[in-house]
Length: 298
Ligand code: MLT
Image (cartoon, rainbow, N blue to C red; front, side, top):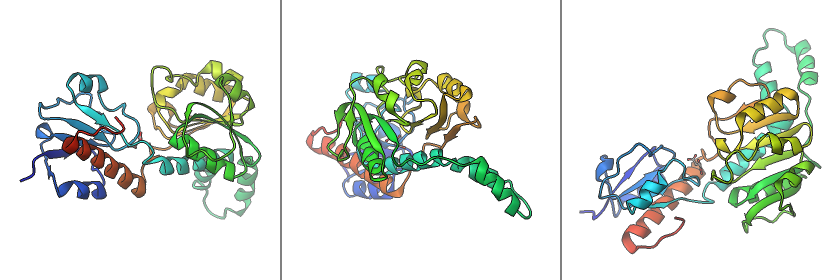
């Protein structure tokens, strides 16, 4: 009989589950679990049982977990930094290109065409003409695993990279001019992409003051967390023409169907590869803690 039982929330990937089942019993009753593997389920309202030793978050952000309560109750929380960085990088690069080439607007318009479209296509060609990213400058706020991979990929596409970051992940291989002052950095950027966690110091950091320093027509990308930007300031800057686009992965009712905003439903880590990597890493961390008392990525 298995010594420990583990519960899962959010349909954790099968690859991750398979790693568990040799040694652990999977329980349907989350209230009796010794460990929980979770993706993005919001756990703030959950009661935790006295049996719960640890939570493994299959992802980087831990804002779905009540960290203070876990600390008070001696529940250790692990996350999986880097395990989905490739998937997020690919979506950000798609966002850079989609935003620059007005792809979302062009596709939406093309889907409304009927009958013989040849004459209308000429109109669309002019209406949705874009700009190229090659030779332009991308400013990255936060050069952790994701930011560093975005920098490398964008550089490979011919972009100049500048950065503002407390730490720089060893993944970074692209040449990157660093700025201590983010307000100075954004002055030289055609695109600004944010890749920091949501913390008291980072919440609302893309606001009207920072936007005022940006180039006219800059594109802002936020594939990290919604509260890193002040949404009203983004909307106002799009309305005034100061910003050209806000590309984001954080569908939010305030941002749906707003001109200049292109939002995906938090797809950044939603690839088979990333889901497998995150679930496997979360399971490994949880098992290593429960079996051996080792703490990694807590
Ligand atoms: C993350 O923080 O890594 C993502 O939110 C992961 C996810 O989509 O579950």
